[in-house]
Amino acid sequence: MNVLITGATGFLGSRIVEHLVDENKINHIIATGRKLSEINKVTSPNVEYILGDLQDRDFTKKLFEKGIDIVINCASLSSPWGSYKSFFDSNITTQKNLIQESVNNSVKRFIYISSPSIYFNFKDSLNTQENTPLPKRMVNNYAKTKWMAERILSESNLPYVILRPRALIGRGDTVIMPRLIRSYLEGKLKIMGSGNNEVDLTPVSNMVEAVRLSIFTPNYNEAYNISNGEPVNLWNSINSILKDLELPAIKKKIPYPVLYMVAVIMEYKSRLLNGKEPILTRYSVGVLAKSFTFDIQKAKKKLNYHPKQTTAQAMDEFVKWYKENNND
Image (spheres, rainbow, N blue to C red):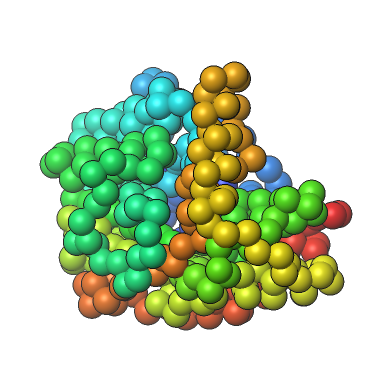
C-alpha cells in the first residue's frame, strides 16, 4: 500500500508520517510540504519527501506517478485572519487538485483533516456532535474554506473519511501552546472571560491513531469529531504548563464583552489600514473565553477510536519538548 501525506512537514503531518512508517501494511510513504526542517523529518527507506506547492497542478500530478492507494490531506492554511483568496487558494484549490488526481488514479481512500472551527458560533458549545447544526455564517475565512473543502470531497466519487480534531497538543506543537506562551512572555496574555470555560484538548498521538484507523475502517464516507472526551479547564491547563516552565500563573481577568468589542475595533482598523492580523480577533477571543467540547461516541463506535494518551500526559510531553527546543 502506497500512502500520500500532504502537510507532512508540519506538526500533525510529521507525526502521522512517524506513526505510519512502522505500519506493516504500508510499503511506501510520499510525504509532501513546502519546507522541511530537521526537527520534523522522518528518516526511513520507506519515506520519500517531495517538496512543492499543491496549488500547482503539475506538481500535484507528479506526486501520484508511483501509484497512490491512500491520500491523507493535512495541508492547510490555518489562521484566524487572512483574505478569502489566500484561504481559497490554500484550502480549496489544493483540495480540488488532490481530488482530481485521486479520481484519475483510482485512489482507494481520501482522508481529510478538517477543523472544529466549522462549528464555532461564539457560544458555549458542550458535547458537540457531527450532526450539530452549523452556523449560518462561518466565523472566518479559514472555517468557511474548510467546510467548503469537506463538501467538495463528500460530493466526489472517492471513498473518504473526514476528521475534525479539537485543539491538538503534544510534542512538536508549534501552533497552540507556543503561541499562547509567546503572548504570555510579551505580557499580552490575560484570562479571557470568567476563566471557567471547559474545553477539549487532544493529544496528537491519539489523533494520528485516528488517522491510522481511518485507513482501514469499513465505515467510510463519514465525518468524525476527534478529541480525548475528557474536558479540562482551559486556563488551569495553561497555568499548569506555565508552572512546569517555571513561570508565574496568569491571574488577571478581562470580561469577555470588553475583549470582544476591542477585537471588533481592532479588526475594523486592520481592514481599514493594512490588512495585517490584529493582536486580538473575535475568533481568538471566543476560542479562549468559551467552552467547547466534543461528543466522540460516533468515532468510538464506527472508527473504533479510543484515546490512549491522557491530556495531562500530552501536556507533559509538550513541556519536555518545548524546553529542549526553545530558548525563551
